[in-house]
Amino acid sequence: MPTINRRRFLQFGAATAVVASATACSSDGPQATIDKQLPVGPYGADATAESVTKDMDLSGKTAVVTGCNSGIGYETMRVLALRGAHVIGTGRTLEKAQIACASVEGITTPVALELSDFQSAVDCANRIKAMNTPIDIVICNAGINTFGELELIDGIERIFRVNHLGHFVLINNLLPALASANAGRIVHVGSVSGYVQAPAVGIDFDNLRGEKIFDAGEAYGRSKLANALFSLQLSKNLADTTTTSNVIHPGLVLTNIARTAPAFLRKGFEWVGPLFAKTPAQGAATQVYVATHPSLEGISGAYFEDCNPVTISGDHHMFDEAMADKLWSVSMEMTRGFI
Image (cartoon, rainbow, N blue to C red):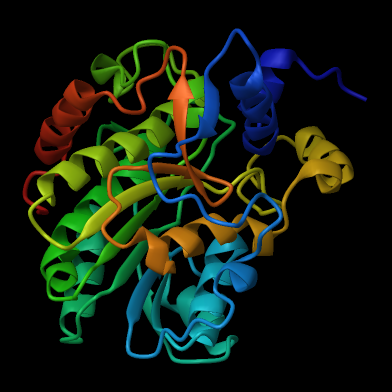
């Protein structure tokens, strides 16, 4: 049985979330506490996507869910469709999206979206806009983790490209469809890794193309911090509109996001994960809650964990407005020609 190096263990996405949660509650690290200045709901860590939408009728609403073919993305699509929404579900291939959409009850439309390919994000947005319907909800759910070495795609570090820039292109191209809705909501699926695993400087802008040493754990944390900062800056850009933008942490969830981890780490999580991890039904609760609950109408620029808005103490960059503004400018430059 191989010995698990602590640093390597922290790079294991699921295990990282556990360690991150513990760190966030310790006295010497960032701590998340409920933000009572914002609406606090009746739900917590045990809530499910079905329970937070009980008695809701989402008929007439259209939602986009990226990464609909597995994990919490699939559960999110299933529950939104169950409550009456028309769900546009994206998968890395049209076939994957078609299979997922066909397997749930309700109205769904499959669309292909490969987030590592900016043109695919543009094409996906164009297909959605061609449906000529207002988009009430977009849940940026899809994402990757990695446990290998540095990988560049067109000169950009892969995790940052997929987890942040792909959705950056998609959302910016979908803004007209969101603006045509009465009160469009954008939900970014981030992580506690954004404030406990990102580089100490936050977004290390001089390392987005692999210029320096690559650390897979920090790369994932950087991408999740980018999700939060993208949401923050987007909320500021949309301040004079009815469209809102918020970011959430789904919790440690039993999904296949760690499928690329070494075998012994995957096995370890299979053995102990069920003791403390959320089910996909529970993991989907926070993003579905933020996307649909009436009490959150008009709430924008917030961060949610376990279905409640939270603030974070200690050293972190989750609400760093200057960094969010710089990230926006850099992201626009890195995606030039696609927005």
